[in-house]
Structure formats: C-alpha cells, structure tokens
Length: 321
Image 1 (cartoon, rainbow, N blue to C red):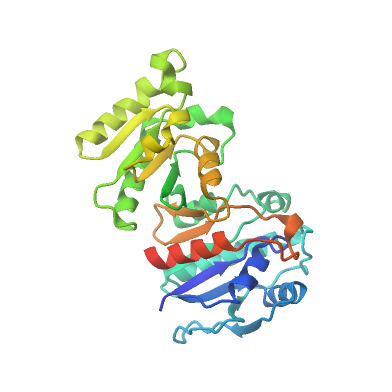
Image 2: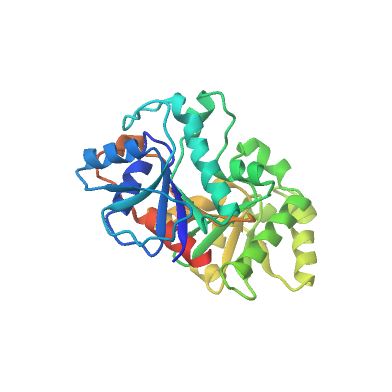
C-alpha cells in the first residue's frame, strides 16, 4: 500500500470539506492529511459527518484506515478558521503544509502528494509572494515544472502558466518551448507509460499566425523548434490553430495537447471534465496531483460540493507514483 500526503489548502475554503468527505469512503492508499486536526474535526461537525482522527506516525507501517477515519499530521493554524472567511494570519501555516508534504515525498515518507486549492490572494495579502502551487514547488525543489491537466482521455499541458496575457509572447521563446516539450514527452513516457506519445502543439497567435500576417512567433520560434525535435523522433503535430486543435478529428489518436498559455488550453479542458479534472505537475522529482478547481469559499461548510476531482487526483497519484 502506498502512502499519500494530502494538503487541504485554504482553511476557509472547501479543501477541509473535501478531506473530510474523502475520509468517509475506503481509499486504495493510506492518506495522510497535513493539516490542523482541530480544523478538520470542526469542519466534520459542521458537515454532520463522522470523523475519527488518527495521529500520523511516520515510522509506523502504512494503515488501511476504515471509512470515517483520517490520519492527520498536525500543522496548527495561527487563527481558528471560519468557513468562507479568509484570514491572512493562516497563510504561513498553509505553506508549511506544502513544505511538510514536499519534504516527506523527497525523503520517502510519502509516495506522492495531492493538493486541494489554495487562495493565492490571501497568501499575498499576508506579505508572501505567491503565484501558485506549481511555481512554489518549482522554487522549493529547484525544478522547472510543467503544468498539465487531464480529464478522461484529454491531457492539456501549458508552456506558460500564471502570467498576464501581455507577458505571454515574450515568455514563449525557443529554450522555454524546448524544455516544456521535452518534459512533457518524458513524463508521458515515464509516468504515463506511453512509449511513443503524439503531442498536438498550438500556435501562439490566432490561426497559428496566418502565415505571418497575425504574428511571426510560429514562423520564427515554434515551427523551427518542432522540426528539430521531430528530427529526433518525437511525434509533434503543429503549430496548429488553437480554435481547431481541440476538435474530435484532431484529438483522435493524440496523447496530449500543448497550449501556449493558460486560457488558451484550460477552458477546453474544464468544459470537457470540470469537477473530474486533475492537475498534474510534470518535471518534478516527486509526484504531485491536484484538483482542477478553486477554493469555492461560498460553498465551504455547506456540504453542497462535489469531491470527484479530489478523488480523481488521488487515484492518479496512486497510479503514477
């Protein structure tokens, strides 16, 4: 049995709810919630769900917890969390849960980590520069990760992630694109077991530049790089117009699609499988998966949420760890 670290994310959001809900059913791995134990107990009571908390013992053998039980590595909050009410005082505790999970994956305590959503704004309000899980893990691990989301058979990776649109074109340079394509190709092979993956690659501009009339990035950067990598044997199709890249005809036989920026690829992915999607961070020395949605502060404590994405993220973490 594998052991998976779960970070519930924003204490005021639905992450604690999802963790409590996950505890109600059997899991195919020992799930260790890295969180404030009192928060989880209080949220379970608010939801009217039974929860027995077992303190985590890292040197003990993995335990197959019965439904209604959750193993917890206690990381205390600085201020009691209220569902739906952000508290910058708890920002450092949230980041501490990520540190504990990451260190545990590196030292072999955990086989993978699964993260519930964090609220980027409240962390920044606490005076801590933070743009997202992916960037935080990149800095902490000295890695250059690639964000990929999956929903069913659809996999969408990104060349750039959390950048303003005005900064995207300058960020799509040949070295960055080469690194991203190589990372995507490597992890599709090594983690997902695809021996010869086919990857669709979007252009940056409308109509993939329209032969240079709508931008020259395709001609000067994207196509030459893809040609060079194709000469090495990679199956890369593109650059393709993003507005037709996700049609059934194009996706048939493709193993992944690579978008140049966040909102070029992810609206399609989330339309295809919102609530069941999974965020996978490629290019790390550890396995990390996450949900495909945000903190949903307005739903925290209501019980009116779908835990499908978290369960899917857990299943994938177990599969590829």
